[in-house]
Image 1: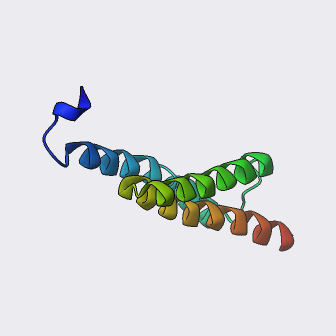
Image 2 (image 1 turned 135 degrees about the horizontal axis):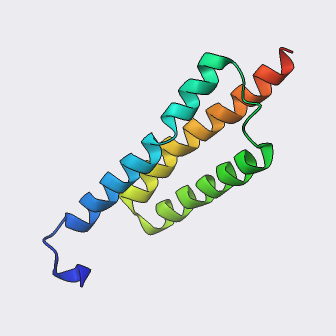
Image 3 (image 1 turned 90 degrees about the vertical axis):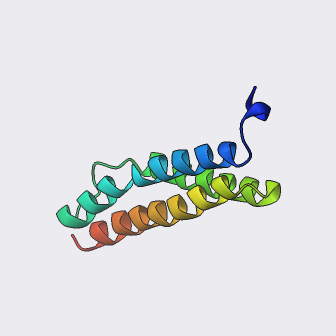
Length: 93
């Protein structure tokens, strides 16, 4: 079914999906920065999510998938930022 779409359509859908799912993390990142607290973020969830995103990035690189690489590279930066804030804000207390 998807093979009948115009060229570039599947990648365009991938980039839109990647943009939306990556952007979904921005409110959490901004909230954590503003409140200087990440206590409501589970360390286990952050660790599993960050590792999963890193693995998706490797997968995207191995398959040469632009949308997967772009989304997971940015999401990995956001996730690492949350992990860093969780650590930094706990140390300050």
